Amino acid sequence: MVKEDKKSGKSVKAGKQGKQIDKALKLAEDRIGMIEESATLAERMANAAKASELLSAVWSLPPAQRLLFHHGVNVTDIDGDSTPGFDGDKFDGERFIDLSSSEIARYQRLMYANGVKGSPRRLLIVLQGMDASGKGGIVRHVFRQGDPMGIHYHGFGKPTEEELNHGFLWRVERELPQPGWIGIFDRSHYEDIVMPHVYGTYPEDVWRARYDMINEFERDLAVSGCAILKIFLVVSREEQKQHFLGRLTDPTKYWKFDVSDVNARERWDDYMAAWQEVFEKTSTPAAPWYLVPADNRWYSRAVVSELLRTTLKNMNMTWPPLEPGVNPEDVRRQLD
Image (cartoon, rainbow, N blue to C red):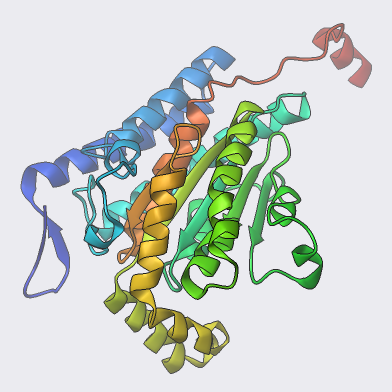
């Protein structure tokens, strides 16, 4: 539980839970420091796995369980200002993200190395949410220590004339991550269901048929070795309003403002109904949806960091060995 100090206005963690989080983060930090000092590769991998386990201990209930969409969950019932599963404050969240991002970078390099050597493993992250829900900020913060070589980010906007001349998945397939890479979609193929659902730009039978097409597409993608994380950032109308006002107040953020964002806000309930149907029809074992409260940016970033790190860790990869026939001692002598 987090309370506010009335004199300072700062949040203060309540006793036991705050101490548990501090302890878990300190243990994780110490273990991360041991990784590079490890004497063997096996010891290094074991320390990395233990560090990730200690980071996950910060959560009272793992986001992969607590925020996984299941039938009976309604997006309109989710409190955007809540922080389910995390009993710390913003300071704890930022500290967690910093430590977690270092391990994400480590696992990212590991997956990239395996991709170079022929492994089909890769990861696709789909970020969706209403305007000003924090999609861009997640990319900047969660991957703050990542290597650009191995990360592909693509934002999907209104389809171009060329894209409209192909099937709706054509432009998506062109941006999928290569083996060893992480692909991040800021908006995605789901816009091609939600937008016509809300605005009636296509006949209903056309966009409804896309549910099955997307499920098949994602199932085949998963079978081919691509893990899929689909995340919907649940922001409240009030929080969105504050961000829009901020864009109008700060000249450095004018470029972010678009009148169409306000128009979309007027159809909030229609959007929520459309997204609810998307979750119900396309959250599958191969490609589940996670509904993440996003009024507190630090919390949504921490959630995505946890989901991403544990997904990479659970791939159970190890570092590729030297090519057959390569003798390290012989190479060392040649280099002398």
